[in-house]
Length: 442
Image 1 (cartoon, rainbow, N blue to C red):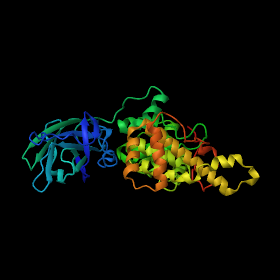
Image 2 (image 1 turned 180 degrees about the vertical axis):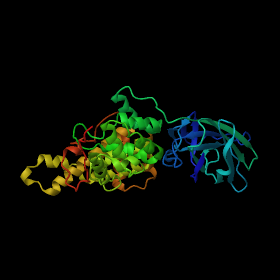
Image 3 (image 1 turned 60 degrees about the horizontal axis):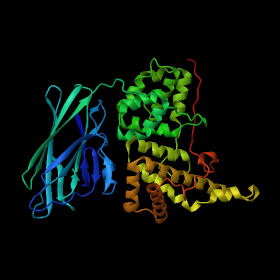
Image 4 (image 1 turned 45 degrees about the vertical axis):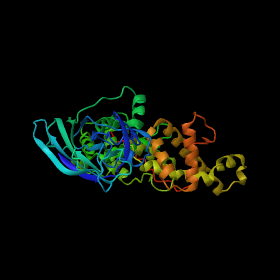
């Protein structure tokens, strides 16, 4: 087992209820009855960056995606949330912690001390505070399967208080996990993956349910592609397992394996040198494909799909900010209606370009509105950006209208759906969407 990083993060204020966290100050206690020094210890798959803490406002209810079992090669983190720490004469806290990890044979496999808990000046000492150091861990191939015990000791150097807590994590074989009873269940699971992440279940979902092609348009489905691309890129052990699933698979599965390997330029598979010619050509064609770049200027609905897929795969803040920047297209609001009302002979290329941008704007508005209503974390990120995001004024105004609508009844007032951007020819130089479709013999 190894520790990947030790990452200091900003102290953030939260109030805990089970694994649901209210990020707000705790009601102050009388000075003569100080709160007891204590902390919550959680093993989580949220990642050491902990976007849900860093980019949400106080008063926000959040859920910690705790893990009870992990796989070899899957990173997970230890998060500690402190309360009741002392403040010295200089107005500073000084809390540290250490941890010891014991394997199923009761042998110590990893330990460290001197980790930062709460240090320096704390704006609101009566608040609960996330530890500055968040440890990321990962089991290695030689580690034993079974239950590991993680013992943590926290020390408040100001008051001398010491508190110990323990959490257990089970290391399980790759194997198979619970599948899906229907395609509908799979589709419901995908956008909520970040709440209960299980990379091995996602691995099987890719092979059994993911459709890389939109059945209506016949084009590549970059929403599903981006979702699984994020997961395979984050978990290299999944990519190796994917490569190992090629031999003996049917043609459809082999092509899905080659597709993802090519996108991630994974070549550590001996059979690549002896692929049948049609499959070799397929692999090389995918490698040369340039998918849409989601973090460039918004010029296609596929970019929007990829950004939402990235959020679904990990609950990250970055794609939400990029989507919100798409609200800058508000300057083209109404261009689509104007184009529809005008005689074709009177319209120009610029009119059509503006109409297309308006259609993209409607897609951004509606995707934000619907996801704010369905995902509290999206709503929390949007609220943070509205208050603290230093957004351009026109974007902030648009975001404020959307948030007001999302927090009210499901009214569609002020938000036109318009024509889906996919239905309008893209006047931009469209991102390359090479669609390798070989028909090699079985």
